[in-house]
Image: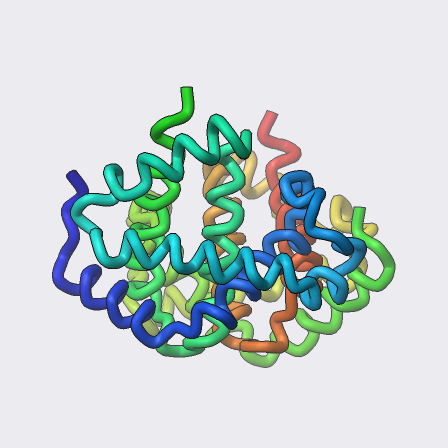
Length: 147
Length: 141
């Protein structure tokens, strides 16, 4: 069981409640595909990922980025239950999508950077630590059903 | 391998950050201490509270070294030679911590530069900081 402080709970709820999923999701996923190009291996059917501009303008990437953020919202709404919340998605990523779980951390780091750029000074060291703790639990939950 | 464009972009960004080296460096260090408390063990001899003189001077040192390296990335091994020796024989910081610091530096840059920290700049910067860390650890063994 993960222990959350009041500060951590409040911080996570606050960040996600103010977030525009349709901006942040696409920004985070496209950043991941640009900064860590090997992650493109999972998106062969997405069309043109040839360069940064193509990735950032790709509607499939945008759509998928938004889906990912909605997936994160499930964890935000169930912070005390994340293992269960993500069990099914974990199986999906392992058995069907065959995604190396190391990639979850890469995407998580890119999301952190996008949120940081948006919040600027408000993204203090303490806020960052809380956000990263949340993402670490998501990443761990998503990796749990891999065998 | 960094492309010419990437090297220019990196040199430009760090050139612009030298005037605020203290703030950038201290910010990155504080983030690292908050997210990765184990890193504080290397600073037990210093006062690393926010805005402390030690923190600011240490942050400045680090950023100026990164900026110096950025001026001619192809010469990184030459530029960093003294720091390589320092880290290998005296400081002996476990190199996994370089990754943690680099990540926090990227977050600091994102907070500082906002939209200007584009994915392209982010990619170049991540590559540079990885190369910097690798060179720094070269004399460890």
